[in-house]
Image (tube, rainbow, N blue to C red; front, side, top):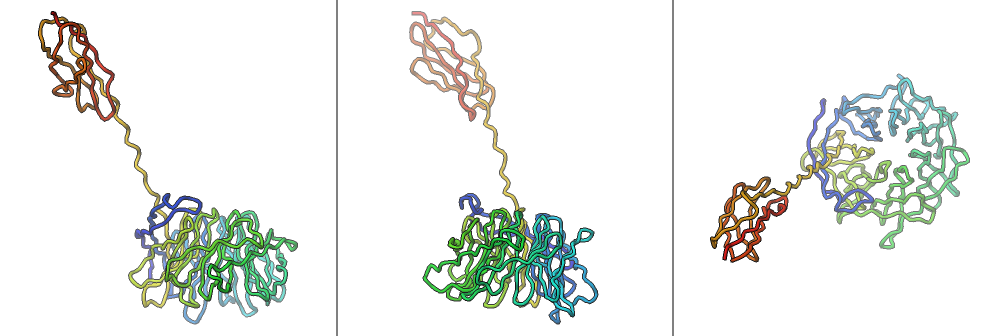
Length: 446
């Protein structure tokens, strides 16, 4: 059991962010923070995480008793409940830290919210069970009630039944984005399907999401919409010939707009999506999930490409990630090989540090010593001077001939003179380029 926090470095190969080129993010490093464990060995479910890094969920201990909880800064804390509550579950948290879920007592299941002084009291439908599953920044809560399930919302704590999609026998609401669009799923005579409600009113418009189309012509079953982003883009999953596969519906989907099928590597097995962040840039989930299970190997999709995520523990570790925020933090659980219980952990992306550009050196400056006009009877003349700055060499152009000087900061060269006027141009060279030329004229007497 982890009674304190542990932080390590994890590396995963990533293709980049959705909407960016794959080359833009060839690799992503993560800081792995292992959270403080619950007080007993348990199976942990992470429900949600806000942009402040508050993670909420619940854990199931021996005797199948479940307790709602949260982590702040990786430190575990139970969520308080009344003495007569037998089980509690947390599924959503908003920017204000209000947590929603449900509690169970002798009278059934009841939607519930935690939030300290700002804790909303959710009106409960009389004589029926109710379940809260999501909350947005404005405090709109969504969920479902009754049996069979019917979708609902709470605005200002007041209970609002949502309309069923046409032909539906049951439906649930599980998420709500910043502008109030509500995500859910429904069942009808043909199977299960995703849908979106326009708002949290009893007269909201319901838009069914088109089922995926099998690339092999197989039978599609088990369609589930899992999360909605700020623009209305939806992550989800489906079963093709019995194997679970991931998908994403575009924003503003119509009943005839099929989702994009996300890729998985060969042999990945059942692959689930659980959340998409509000910006719509990242989808997280798990691959290699055993039939009927909930844990495999944590993964993500960027730029439409699959990538594994780092996981704590040694060989044989299983993991899944089920929450992500717009800071890029990803929360999930892992289970070491052969272990009976889970541990919660957080992946925090480490920004790539781009070194500042190295300034290009300035071009050097060259000067010739002495007069700039000379007269001599000699056939050869020694010319001297100095060069400052970053200098690698000094050359002189004597007529059509180039002569290299000896030295750099203090230099000298011998120029062969023809009878009459000789125009000489001296230039210093360096990493910053060439200097402005220094010129002199030497007249050799005939």
